[in-house]
Picture (cartoon, rainbow, N blue to C red):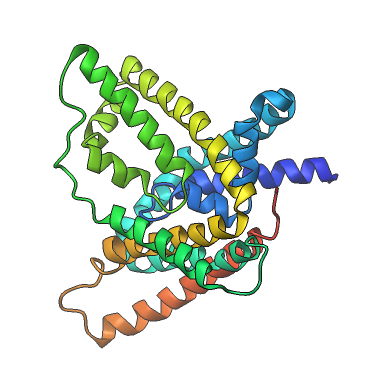
Length: 285
C-alpha cells in the first residue's frame, strides 16, 4: 500500500475509533482525537478550510466516513458492553485515556517541567472536574415554543460544538446540564428534520467559530496549551471512575467478585493503554 492509501486508511480508522467511543462517559471526541494524534490536523483543516478546499475536504470526508461507521456500528456494541461489563470495559477506556498521555506530553515541545506547566495543568484539571459536577436538570433550554425554542436549539448547537472540540468535556453531560438530552433523542427517534437541521447547522457554525482561536492558541502558546489539555484529558478520567467504575461495584462484593473483576480490569487497562499508545504513533499532524 502506498503512503497516500496508508494515510487515508489511518485517518478513517482514527475517525472510526473516535465515533465509536463518543458514547463512553468521560471519553469525548476531542479527547480521543488528541490521544490518536489527529486533533491538530482536524483543527487546521476546519479553521483553514478555504486555503485548501480540495485537500481539507478530502481529509474531513475520510475522517467523517470513519466516524460515521464508528457511530453506526461499534457505538451500540460499546453501549451494550458498558451495560453488561461496566467495570471491565471502563478500565479499558481508562487505560486508553492514560495511554495517550506520553504522546500528548511530547507535544509540549519542552522537556523541563516548570512551575507554570503545573499551573496550566491544574487549571485544565480543575475546569473539567468542575464541569463534571455541574448539576443536571436545573437548566432547561428545551422549554418554550416558536422562535424562542429554535433560538435555544441554536445556542445548544454552539455549546455542543464547544464540547466536541475541547478535549475532556463530555458532550452527553453538557446536553444533560442544558436539559436538551431527552429532547434531542426524541427529535432523532421521531425524525424531526427541523430540530435536527437547526441543531446540526448551529453545531457546524460553532465548530468553525471555535477552531480558529484554538489553532492560534496552540501555535502561539504550545507548551501551556498542551499542559492544560493534559489536565483536561486526565480530568476526564474522573467521570469514568465516578459514573461507571464505582457504580459497577456491587454492594455485596466479596473476594469471589473482586479477584476476577480486578484481574480482568487490569488486563483491559493494559490493552487500552497499549492500543492507544501504539495508534498515537501514527500521527497525521
